[in-house]
Image (tube, rainbow, N blue to C red):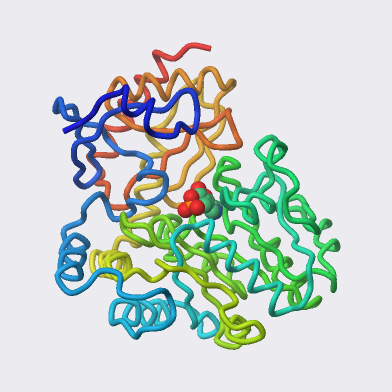
Length: 396
Ligand SMILES: Cc1ncc(COP(=O)(O)O)c(C=O)c1O
């Protein structure tokens, strides 16, 4: 075993000067264990990934069975493989008929890259409309359509012809026009600190896109896969996107993303030019097997049915004079405080007490809670006690 901090700091690229820095030996359900036997409750699901818990036995079994058959055999799109066929069929059975054609990729950001390219190719337009405070990923295209200016400045030039409008503000929808190839939007803005749009707004957005012939891309990379209480968040708004992007929890702990559209739209990648989007590892059979097993767990264990009640229980227990606001949909929470310093202090105290909550990328006044959907009521009570203790101990 090598849990050396020197190796971690010197031989692994650092994404910030202050990594969370706990060592992980193994994980099970909602718990992570360090080599010294310390147990941590994972209240963030590895940032929106472990919706069915860590190493769910059904997922692990499916991975092992696939490993015993074959690993990678060919780049995406050439060979017929049972794992990707079965996953695509399953998704088609769970989605509206217009979302019947999947393109499997490796990550959330790649799913968005594919979706943006597809929209430009299909509409033969160039403008992309996105939203202030959004987050869509860290590669050039996804970064270009993300709202956080500080994160973008040093990487310009980025994609041209991107227009930003305000989220959940109907009067801005007029800026979506016949020049617009697509609108990309998180159904629930995650890293902006859980911003939930009104149903009327989402319907108006859908209507405007249809009126001007712009494709609507819903990014459900963070809010999909049951997190909000329905398998996909858009179901709650009674709209259907032209392209849906998913990743994170979709893989059940292995890396896979997907953009999904109609067969007609997706076909524009097939010719002129051929190979409109290609990827070596997209649709990796082990990831597809893990993904299918994850969907099966959500279904068989009826996980969606208890999401709302569990969310309400958290909300009822998290009462403290320092909490300014709680924004919640399903089991996705932003808990707001008066200062970023207090949030830091709470997250760090919670860590010392063995509970992992975490920051948002673009909203320093909140921390997030997004536990595995498998969390039990007792585990919620225990976790909330610890969080309240961490808030008591916090300073500004
Ligand atoms: C809404 C949303 N879109 C896209 C991404 C990017 O996904 P990935 O980190 O897999 O590239 C994220 C990641 O946090 C996200 O929250």
